[in-house]
Every structure is written in structure tokens, then in C-alpha cells.
Image (cartoon, rainbow, N blue to C red):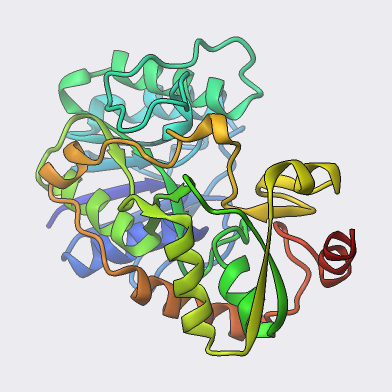
Length: 318
């Protein structure tokens, strides 16, 4: 039986990867503090604080695949030191944020990377993690450069903002969509690929991204899934920025709305992902599952991304 070790495994993507590995018949261990949630049913949790020098003492023996989810530099380094020599395959979950250029559409894995300067910054730390990992065994390493991860359970609230917003009905503020794209990958599709890539010994850097879709199509699909009466009001970039609306994510934002100069961020080449066995479900399926999750959590709940009803009304009023 294959032995899979997930460094993490109790939060969103990690739990989905554990579930995929269990479904494929693997023996799955998750090393984590256990504070982010529970492990998938059937997985074993080894509770450990990775700041501790004995953090890895509870994961003994050899592993068919080790999957690293952290971008914390000391965690990445200590995990490699303790486990790299006992792993037949090593998967680092990285990010398309490692690329220095977000303006060029369809760039592939050979595009230049950010040069790490400040390891407290996400992109810098991800590049640093990639270099540490690659140096320990490039013939065994997969650098899974994930794009925007979407679907039920999303802790960032980005993608789910839209079906939840349309489900509330009424006048709905949207950005102008001309020339804008989204490249979201369903969390369960990404997890299934990570499991399969470890089992089939995929190595090298791979953009693990969703299908490139126009933002207008994503919003229309969200509106159709909600099935409520809504009137969309599109404002241009200058107006939104003047009224204090932020790009992409976080408070007082319109999620998935990117600056015009970042037109390549959501249009990465997916050729290597598809060639290595990546599969993606239809957008409508992901949107339906996301909306079901949003309704279960409450479409009017406080969110980590998007506009509150009061903020949206204020922006619309000008």
C-alpha cells in the first residue's frame, strides 16, 4: 500500500488531497497542529508543532509521496531536512504568484520568477521554497504551481462571493468585464491531480490552473446558479477605484477583478497540467457546489473578501 504524508492536511486543500489519496487506496498520514480542522475520514493525524525540533519524530519510515503545503521558509527547510531522503516523490504546492510577469497571456513554466528579497512576502517565500525543494532532489520533485483555487469550503471567500451575492438578489455591482478573465481550478480537481501526479511520478514545474474563462461568463454562470432576480450595474475601473473599491480580494473588494495590467495572471498556459493528467469539471458544476456551500454557511455572513451590503450601496450611490 502506498504511504502518503501530507505536511498539513487539516485545512481546505490539504484535506481534499488526503481524501483523494484515501480514495485511491493509499495509507495517509497528516502532520499538523490540528487546529485548522479535522483530517479526512480514514487518515491518521500526527499532531505536531513544526516550530519544535522534534516535530517530525512521529512520522517514521519511508514515504511514496510527501506533500508540502506550507510556504513558511523554516517549515519548508525543516521538512526537507527531516524527510527528503525518505521520500520517493516530493510535491511542493506552490503558486502562479511566483512569476515576475503578470502581463503576458499564456506564459508557461519557463517564464521568469520573482527574485526573493523579503521572505515575509508570499511570492518571494514561494520561490524560496521551490528552490530549497528542487535542490534536495530535482528528479523526484513536483512544483505544483496552483492558480486560483475555488469551490466549496474556500476560506478566502473570493470565488464564492459572486454566487452568494447573486443569491441575495437586487441591484448587483459588477466591474466592467471586457478583456477580463478568470482561471479558477476546483479544489477537488486540484487535489485529484496532486494525488495522481504523485502516484505517476510527475516531476518538474507545472501550472496547476483552471480553464481560462471570460469574467463575464463566470458572473453569468453565478447569476444563473442563484436563480434570483438581479439587475447588474457595471462600473468602470476608474470609478471603482475612486470610490475605494479594491481589486481581487480582501475587504471592500470586488473579487476576481484584476488590474488591466495583470491580464496575464489569469491566463497562464495549462498545457503541462493537461499533459500530466489534469482534469477539470464544468464551471456550472463548481458554481453549483460553491453556492450550496455558501448557502450552508450563510450568504449574508461576514466575509474575508468582497463588499458588504452597506459598502455596495454606498459605491452604487456614488
